[in-house]
Amino acid sequence: MEGERPVEPQRLDPPAELNKIQHFAIITTVSAIEKSVRSATAADMAAIASIYAHYVAHTVATFDEVAPTADDWRRKRDDLTGRGLPFLVALAGDEVAGFAYAGPFRPKPAYRHTVEDTIYLAPAYTGKGLGSTLLEAVLAGCAEAGARQVVAVIADTGSDASAALHRRFGFAEAGRLVNVGYKHARWIDTLLMQRPL
Image (cartoon, rainbow, N blue to C red; front, side, top):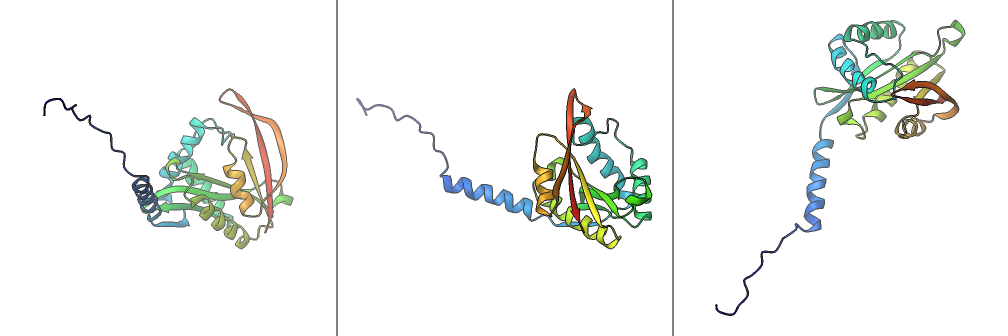
């Protein structure tokens, strides 16, 4: 009609409730993936090597500067399981989403009842509870193997996630080693945590 202004198109944002529902559905879908933990097999070593290689190349979470090969991991698994210690993988569906193991804390014989734990998750699976699942299983395996103390040596990456995980499982801070590592052009501290079994 003459004299009327044209109607401007309006941007319609979905209601906040809809955004919450969509977000919840995504979380539910991720959470619905079947998660399990089992002993690592030789067939898992390529996935373990790939997960760890990410941390070697892109983070200071490990002081390794060259990523071990799948064959290196196979030898490590064989050595640790030969000692009766746990070497585990976390699965999300059929995919290896992380791994954990316990190894001797130090090589001298008097340390034989003390182990050091190690946990790494594929970047896509961090923050989904798999670290807790792995740590719980590793601690059970350590107790079954006769270990009396478990030590965690945690690189100061700037994130508290690993230390917080260990605190939830009863680890206490035992000390800090200052500037003991140098990687990616920075000095790195390590936090020592300990838990009796």
